[in-house]
Amino acid sequence: MTMIRPFLMFQGAVAAKAIDLYVTTFDGAVLSSVPHADPKHGIQLAELVIKGQSVLISDSSVDHAFDFTPSTSLFVDCDDREELERLTEALGAGGKTYMPLGEYGFSTAFAWVGDRFGVSWQLNLA
Image 1 (spheres, rainbow, N blue to C red):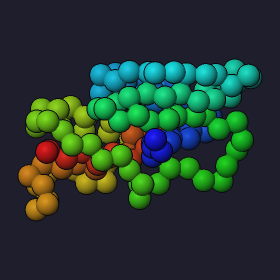
Image 2 (image 1 turned 135 degrees about the horizontal axis):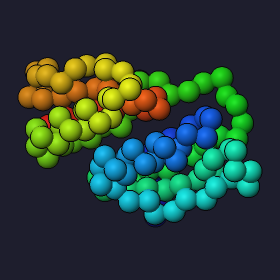
Image 3 (image 1 turned 120 degrees about the vertical axis):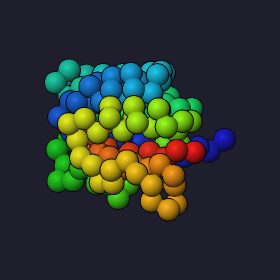
Image 4 (image 1 turned 180 degrees about the vertical axis):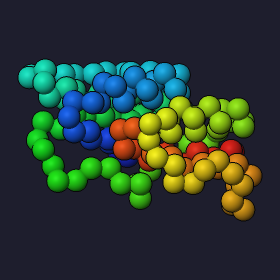
């Protein structure tokens, strides 16, 4: 079966720190993780599950002139306001706020943050 999975490529061997944040914040699980042959390049490929979604993560061993942009984000439906507030705080710490937690007409509670690694998260009260 063909699947589409989000793929997050980091630069600077920070994928392990990002994975730790995501697995801790979402009570997720790392399914696999393979390091690059040269440890200074970090993780070649890891797969984790957060809120039931498989996500692939890698540290690029090649420098690129691009990085993450908020126009591509991971959209998370939260079960309750407490979860939404917790995720907004944890993922937004040290990052950016694009839309602070509030009511925006399309949702009674919504926040859009970029984490300290540059990944963009849209957090919605389902």
